[in-house]
Length: 397
Ligand SMILES: Cc1ncc(COP(=O)(O)O)c(C=O)c1O
Image 1 (cartoon, rainbow, N blue to C red):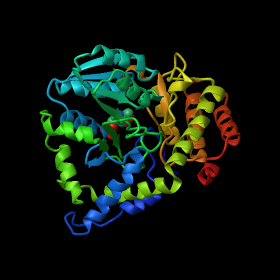
Image 2: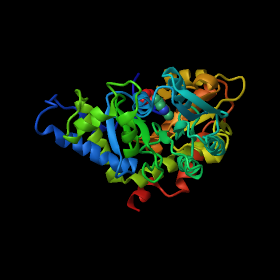
Image 3: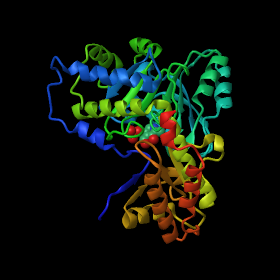
């Protein structure tokens, strides 16, 4: 197909040319005397992204899923009790992993389209007088439904119940796009990956581990080897890795972290919120469709999950967008398969790129029989962006 492919799944996201160029490097000796400069540059520059001074960023040659497993197997003993909520495919998969690894999970079942139920976390934690719950899991941004949860409120629930459990947060589709505060929120493990807000190819698990979690790892008996935190932290202390790292990925990470620092992390968040506002205007005001997120308080600034009308298969819209217009939209997963399609709006993006996605999604919907007004999505998004401060002027702020 002539022209470029429009990649609008909520990860992997577009990799900026600067990052691609930085990654085009010959291989080198990862045990050389100068290699630690690269390792240290990456680990140091990641700390402000996690908003931590005391926790340790860790890079695994995996994806986000590997970091989920690392959190569980490094910090917990076999059969330990975990408290988690399930309201979408990714929060589901983490719960499923806990069960498959033999942990005892109390699952707060929550309707898909809502976020982490803070009051129910508080009730379970308060009822757990013997402190059997050893870890609390929360998915900050449920990519399957476009729902963002309030992690700070989960920390407040732990504090108000005076509960010592570790707090593990999945920030795979939030980190470097939606505010995340490791130290302020008392997060013990933050799980993320390279292919979303960090604007890198898929293939690196990016996680951050508190001192409390590293302390727990010293005595935790769950089996692990490749994903052992201590092996990694010890090797990183001298600037090396316990096994061969992906060298191009480290160069890419150093570049993407430089780009985030140049824009300013707070401006990156504002840009995501501003771009997401345009997409939501297109969906709600232009197309007059519904989001899967059932209330504005859950609206995600990195992904919108758009419900298709009854009688329409969301998978058709996605297939037409891909085959006819060279546009990749996100699919409805598991429970919401066929009921929605998703537009990812995170990473290296601006208004005009998003207008391409909105135009393509609109044509694919019309072709699939969705009765939207032609041009209405783009018009609503344009009105939103034109009547709100531009991302570029926020840069200067
Ligand atoms: C919220 C969330 N958690 C976890 C994952 C799994 O991450 P990965 O595919 O990098 O293993 C994803 C992937 O999209 C995700 O969106």
